Length: 117
Length: 140
Image 1 (cartoon, each protein chain N blue to C red):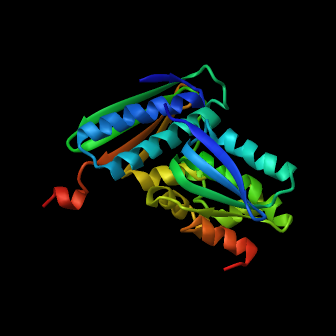
Image 2: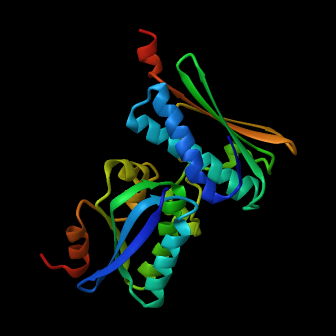
């Protein structure tokens, strides 16, 4: 069965979402809820780790578009990391690298927030 | 196969298409691309043609002809004109507060041909075609 889950943890002052499984029009609502929870807690520095994400459709991309403006208005950001080539290809085709930092490694993404090397 | 217009059924469709595409001889990457294109087509039907009504029907048919893997996705919902869907401009979409609009573009990039046809009020079809071999190779 295709499943999707969002794990949440914190590294320093940064919230890290670990995506797992299949992100499509059915499971996108779960990612929305995860973002909503962080915004309710006023946590605006967010890294999304795609290491365990197997699949994404445009419904998943839409969730990132839904929250980015609000987050950036609050001096935060959503940085993306650890994408497989297949997942990165989908983001790249529609131009996401123009708007989002997409890093190879979670550590690089976290350091972009903290400025620590 | 026939599914009800609920997003929970997208997984079933992906498996159906992936199994058929793999049996036809596509490699993993091509299977993945075909699956995404069909997922996008079905999602569009659920969200737009049927406006998220959960008990309508979507028909997915696969045909294999002369090195062409053809997937037809049909519905009886609201028609649309694909020429009115602009190519994605992620900056512009953000400026407009748009969260969707990537699906048709992804469909066109994932397979070799995409055709939309419609009998208004009766039936809409999206035909997605992937060649087993690129045309240039096939003609050598």
